[in-house]
Image 1 (cartoon, one colour):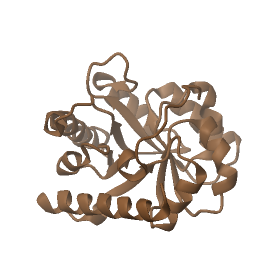
Image 2: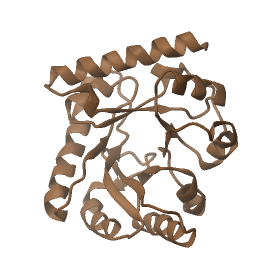
Image 3: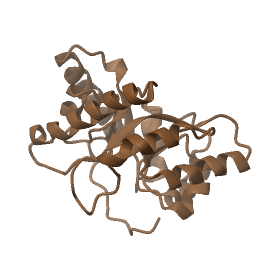
Image 4: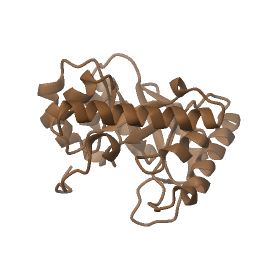
Length: 238
């Protein structure tokens, strides 16, 4: 995909975000677009950065380690949006500005310890990934576990618990996904009261359904295909 195509795609996605936001009385500036750059070559990521995007999401620690040398000069924010294996936590804590897929307390503790032992300044932003549908193939924390786990994660000194993330079932009709997005927002609202703290981030919605997610309160949307086109399959190794 050439640079002009990437610029055009970014503009179209930003227009879609604006339309969805205005529909429910929100401003497009309230929503952060994260370009899901997994399996994309460094050249495509750089072109998207030059077109104006500043947030990127990677799925695998090892893949980002391979790209980082070519992209380290970019003043971008790098999110880990894929499932994080506990044995990769120490590396992730040093490589990313945000880990958006924390799914248990033990993983959060590993991230916290790695930041402390590595002497890394500032807190690592984290989101709790919630399993909003009973799909055994999905990662994420069960809804009934979120309150107790959130309290423990919020106490970790090197982490900043900023909100929740979900990956709902893939359904062709985006309207059918609305109930999952709404449930995540309601859970976030409940947590804010129980924890007596702000959780401003709701990361939900991808290329085919992010408009509905925005209508339901998303503050971050994760978009890959609509920006970069369909990607080639990659091995599952992290």
